[in-house]
Amino acid sequence: MMQRLRKNYWRVPLVALCQLLLLQTAFGQAQAGGKRNLRIVVTQGDAARNVVQQIPARPLLIRVEDGTGNPVAGATVVFTAPSVGPSGEFADDSRVVRVMTGPDGLASAGVFHPNASTGGYQIRVTAELQGEMASAVISQTNIAEKKGRGKLIAALAIAAAAAGAAIAYSRKNGGSSDTPTITFGGGAVGAPR
Image 1 (cartoon, rainbow, N blue to C red):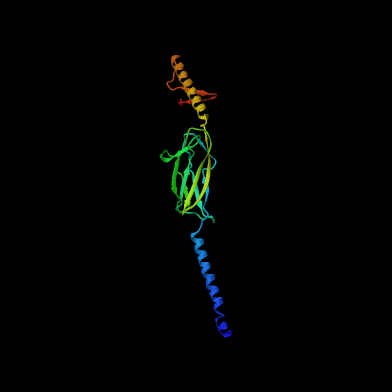
Image 2: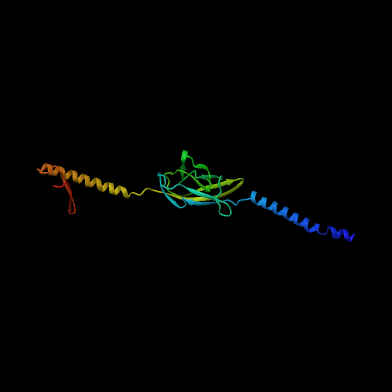
Protein backbone atom coordinates (compact mmCIF):
# COMPACT_ATOMS: atom_id res chain seq x y z
CA MET A 1 0.00 0.00 0.00
CA MET A 2 2.87 2.38 0.72
CA GLN A 3 4.19 1.89 -2.76
CA ARG A 4 0.86 2.90 -4.26
CA LEU A 5 0.87 6.12 -2.18
CA ARG A 6 4.39 6.90 -3.28
CA LYS A 7 3.47 6.37 -6.93
CA ASN A 8 0.52 8.78 -6.66
CA TYR A 9 2.31 11.33 -4.48
CA TRP A 10 3.29 13.48 -7.44
CA ARG A 11 -0.39 13.82 -8.44
CA VAL A 12 -1.37 15.87 -5.36
CA PRO A 13 0.77 18.93 -6.20
CA LEU A 14 -0.31 18.69 -9.84
CA VAL A 15 -4.02 18.65 -8.93
CA ALA A 16 -3.52 21.58 -6.55
CA LEU A 17 -1.67 23.54 -9.22
CA CYS A 18 -4.44 22.91 -11.76
CA GLN A 19 -7.09 24.02 -9.28
CA LEU A 20 -5.12 27.18 -8.52
CA LEU A 21 -4.82 28.01 -12.22
CA LEU A 22 -8.55 27.45 -12.73
CA LEU A 23 -9.37 29.74 -9.80
CA GLN A 24 -7.01 32.42 -11.07
CA THR A 25 -8.54 32.31 -14.55
CA ALA A 26 -12.09 32.47 -13.17
CA PHE A 27 -11.15 35.36 -10.87
CA GLY A 28 -9.50 37.26 -13.74
CA GLN A 29 -12.61 36.85 -15.92
CA ALA A 30 -14.83 38.07 -13.10
CA GLN A 31 -12.65 41.15 -12.72
CA ALA A 32 -12.70 41.90 -16.47
CA GLY A 33 -16.48 41.55 -16.74
CA GLY A 34 -17.14 43.00 -13.30
CA LYS A 35 -17.50 46.47 -11.95
CA ARG A 36 -15.71 49.41 -13.51
CA ASN A 37 -16.36 51.78 -10.59
CA LEU A 38 -17.71 54.58 -12.80
CA ARG A 39 -17.22 58.16 -11.77
CA ILE A 40 -18.07 61.52 -13.33
CA VAL A 41 -15.54 64.34 -13.52
CA VAL A 42 -16.95 67.79 -14.33
CA THR A 43 -14.49 69.33 -16.79
CA GLN A 44 -16.37 72.48 -17.76
CA GLY A 45 -19.24 74.52 -16.34
CA ASP A 46 -19.02 74.03 -12.58
CA ALA A 47 -19.44 77.29 -10.61
CA ALA A 48 -20.41 79.13 -13.81
CA ARG A 49 -22.16 82.49 -13.57
CA ASN A 50 -24.65 82.79 -16.42
CA VAL A 51 -26.32 86.02 -17.49
CA VAL A 52 -30.07 85.39 -17.52
CA GLN A 53 -31.60 84.69 -20.92
CA GLN A 54 -28.16 84.50 -22.60
CA ILE A 55 -26.51 81.30 -23.80
CA PRO A 56 -23.13 80.77 -22.06
CA ALA A 57 -20.04 80.71 -24.26
CA ARG A 58 -18.87 77.34 -22.90
CA PRO A 59 -21.16 74.27 -22.75
CA LEU A 60 -21.46 71.89 -19.80
CA LEU A 61 -18.90 69.10 -20.24
CA ILE A 62 -18.20 65.99 -18.18
CA ARG A 63 -15.91 62.98 -18.46
CA VAL A 64 -16.88 59.47 -17.39
CA GLU A 65 -13.96 57.43 -16.04
CA ASP A 66 -13.46 53.98 -14.59
CA GLY A 67 -11.83 53.30 -11.23
CA THR A 68 -8.33 53.64 -12.70
CA GLY A 69 -9.00 56.99 -14.42
CA ASN A 70 -9.41 55.60 -17.94
CA PRO A 71 -12.14 57.13 -20.15
CA VAL A 72 -15.36 55.14 -20.52
CA ALA A 73 -16.90 55.18 -24.00
CA GLY A 74 -20.55 54.41 -24.73
CA ALA A 75 -21.97 55.40 -21.33
CA THR A 76 -25.43 57.03 -21.30
CA VAL A 77 -25.26 60.45 -19.63
CA VAL A 78 -28.33 62.42 -18.50
CA PHE A 79 -28.16 66.13 -17.60
CA THR A 80 -31.19 67.37 -15.59
CA ALA A 81 -31.86 71.04 -14.76
CA PRO A 82 -34.26 72.05 -11.95
CA SER A 83 -37.92 72.37 -12.98
CA VAL A 84 -38.64 75.48 -10.85
CA GLY A 85 -36.74 78.60 -9.80
CA PRO A 86 -33.35 79.55 -11.21
CA SER A 87 -32.56 77.03 -13.93
CA GLY A 88 -32.46 76.80 -17.70
CA GLU A 89 -33.25 74.64 -20.68
CA PHE A 90 -31.23 72.55 -23.08
CA ALA A 91 -31.85 72.20 -26.80
CA ASP A 92 -35.46 71.36 -27.66
CA ASP A 93 -36.59 73.58 -24.73
CA SER A 94 -36.21 70.60 -22.39
CA ARG A 95 -34.88 70.48 -18.84
CA VAL A 96 -33.41 67.02 -19.52
CA VAL A 97 -30.91 65.98 -22.19
CA ARG A 98 -29.54 62.47 -22.82
CA VAL A 99 -26.20 61.93 -24.62
CA MET A 100 -23.53 59.23 -24.98
CA THR A 101 -19.85 59.46 -24.10
CA GLY A 102 -17.37 59.36 -26.95
CA PRO A 103 -14.14 57.34 -27.11
CA ASP A 104 -12.52 59.97 -24.88
CA GLY A 105 -15.21 59.52 -22.20
CA LEU A 106 -16.49 63.07 -22.77
CA ALA A 107 -20.16 64.08 -22.95
CA SER A 108 -21.50 67.60 -23.56
CA ALA A 109 -24.98 68.86 -22.70
CA GLY A 110 -24.85 71.09 -25.79
CA VAL A 111 -26.62 74.44 -25.78
CA PHE A 112 -27.93 75.56 -22.36
CA HIS A 113 -30.19 78.60 -22.09
CA PRO A 114 -30.50 80.08 -18.56
CA ASN A 115 -34.02 81.21 -17.60
CA ALA A 116 -34.95 84.68 -16.28
CA SER A 117 -34.73 83.75 -12.56
CA THR A 118 -31.56 84.80 -10.73
CA GLY A 119 -29.88 82.65 -8.09
CA GLY A 120 -27.94 79.44 -7.61
CA TYR A 121 -28.96 75.92 -8.63
CA GLN A 122 -27.54 72.52 -9.47
CA ILE A 123 -27.72 70.51 -12.67
CA ARG A 124 -27.76 66.79 -11.86
CA VAL A 125 -25.70 64.43 -14.01
CA THR A 126 -25.97 60.64 -14.10
CA ALA A 127 -23.96 58.16 -16.13
CA GLU A 128 -24.90 54.52 -16.74
CA LEU A 129 -23.11 51.64 -18.44
CA GLN A 130 -24.04 47.96 -18.19
CA GLY A 131 -26.01 48.45 -14.99
CA GLU A 132 -23.36 50.56 -13.24
CA MET A 133 -24.21 54.15 -12.35
CA ALA A 134 -22.44 57.29 -11.21
CA SER A 135 -23.76 60.75 -10.38
CA ALA A 136 -22.50 64.29 -9.92
CA VAL A 137 -23.81 67.86 -9.75
CA ILE A 138 -22.79 70.96 -11.69
CA SER A 139 -23.35 74.16 -9.69
CA GLN A 140 -24.57 77.17 -11.66
CA THR A 141 -25.72 80.71 -10.83
CA ASN A 142 -27.97 82.90 -12.97
CA ILE A 143 -27.13 86.60 -12.61
CA ALA A 144 -28.82 89.75 -13.91
CA GLU A 145 -27.31 91.56 -16.88
CA LYS A 146 -25.02 94.42 -15.93
CA LYS A 147 -26.34 97.89 -16.74
CA GLY A 148 -22.94 99.49 -17.51
CA ARG A 149 -23.55 99.57 -21.27
CA GLY A 150 -26.67 101.68 -20.78
CA LYS A 151 -24.59 104.52 -19.32
CA LEU A 152 -22.27 104.51 -22.34
CA ILE A 153 -25.19 104.56 -24.76
CA ALA A 154 -26.82 107.41 -22.82
CA ALA A 155 -23.57 109.41 -22.88
CA LEU A 156 -23.23 108.90 -26.64
CA ALA A 157 -26.86 109.97 -27.18
CA ILE A 158 -26.31 113.15 -25.16
CA ALA A 159 -23.13 113.90 -27.14
CA ALA A 160 -24.98 113.37 -30.44
CA ALA A 161 -27.82 115.66 -29.33
CA ALA A 162 -25.31 118.32 -28.27
CA ALA A 163 -23.54 118.05 -31.62
CA GLY A 164 -26.86 118.39 -33.45
CA ALA A 165 -27.70 121.48 -31.40
CA ALA A 166 -24.26 122.97 -32.11
CA ILE A 167 -24.71 122.44 -35.87
CA ALA A 168 -28.15 124.02 -35.82
CA TYR A 169 -26.86 126.99 -33.83
CA SER A 170 -23.89 127.42 -36.18
CA ARG A 171 -26.06 127.40 -39.30
CA LYS A 172 -28.58 129.78 -37.73
CA ASN A 173 -25.85 132.26 -36.89
CA GLY A 174 -24.18 132.20 -40.29
CA GLY A 175 -21.53 129.56 -39.78
CA SER A 176 -19.12 129.48 -42.72
CA SER A 177 -18.46 125.74 -42.89
CA ASP A 178 -20.88 122.98 -43.85
CA THR A 179 -18.83 120.48 -41.88
CA PRO A 180 -19.19 120.92 -38.12
CA THR A 181 -16.32 120.73 -35.68
CA ILE A 182 -17.04 119.16 -32.30
CA THR A 183 -14.79 120.04 -29.39
CA PHE A 184 -14.54 117.81 -26.28
CA GLY A 185 -12.40 119.42 -23.63
CA GLY A 186 -9.54 120.55 -25.81
CA GLY A 187 -8.89 118.73 -29.06
CA ALA A 188 -11.06 119.45 -32.10
CA VAL A 189 -12.69 116.62 -33.99
CA GLY A 190 -14.04 117.16 -37.44
CA ALA A 191 -13.20 117.47 -41.12
CA PRO A 192 -9.74 118.78 -41.98
CA ARG A 193 -9.59 122.33 -43.28
